[in-house]
Length: 495
Image (cartoon, rainbow, N blue to C red; front, top):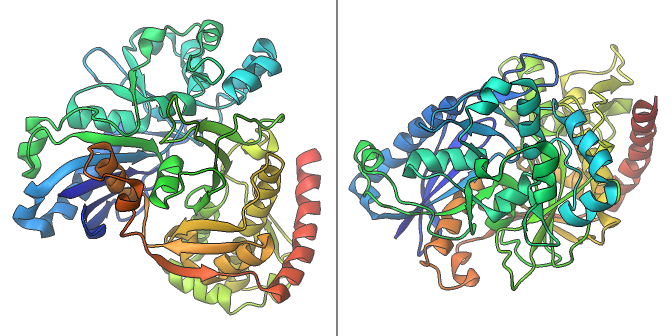
């Protein structure tokens, strides 16, 4: 059986088909060639048109299927990974009512902060394990307060992956993990939080019916099947947000295991079987993809909005046509420490680990006489690693203290410079694997449809492609530089 995996990101949509038995990717494609537009009609807002997602998905799917020829008929299950925390609203005809308010949009911060105060810190942290913050529930409450005509027309709300699944199957569903991701879930009671819905004035009828992440969630419509030469009825059998899915793709399913990624945002994601929370709500806890009533599996997530997007911004605005590899080569030619140049990379909206403050990005110590492009690129990679260390120190307070971190060979982890900095700075071994979000979603589809009989079978094709181990010399340099960076950061936060 062949398995189709879809990864709907905020930059692009990637599609992969893997041989389920060998666990090897047969074809991969992504679209668009440049990054998808994020609209910001008001500073701090971030929106995308779901129709744009769909168009780019269909183009990526066509490109992925083309080299398979008639073998595409062997595709037997579909898995979906998607950018987390977004809000999609549709009417009774399943038509989108407004652009999606995506994960890095900051407009609902005040809405969530009010909810945290008025519902009470004790209730929110013990029942929701999070502040309502800037998550999907608060975004929906913002629509209710500010766009009442839109709100009155809503039939169902969805996460971005739910929308994609709806277009594929014509069915509106979500997952239990997705409900927790939107901060709708009461962890103590194991159900949707009535208190949260009552406080926000949200009808439970607006929520889609939930299913397990691994389950039969609807079949491919005949219209879609005919358009792409696929069999009708192929089940969507797996669905998860991008970070739980990244963990799945790296076989991070058990307590103590940790995954990380550094795409547009950066994430450290650890699995635990203990229901816990951060008293300051700087990190967030969700139901992991393999959580069940009988087996507690929670994902503890720390998100850093300003990571890879800094690298992307530099490429667009200073790269003059350079590829990321060429930027990495220029960074590698600069000595560790970037000759005094430091950057705060937090220019992508409110940062959860700073309790939803938007401190903006800034450059420090720039000297026009000695600093060149390479210094800027290396300082960016160093600063992103500093932000990961800062986040990891927060996670250690909740008992997650990894000696090994797993990552896919993609995005920032393609840079040897970045991997070596992060490994030395955090005293962890960085292990890379031959996987990404779309391949992980394909494996998830195989688990969900019952093709794989065990986790071991599902991940038999997962291979280590590289490691970075702490370097004591680099550790000494970067420990000192981190303290300088931390002083600048604290002044920025508390000014």
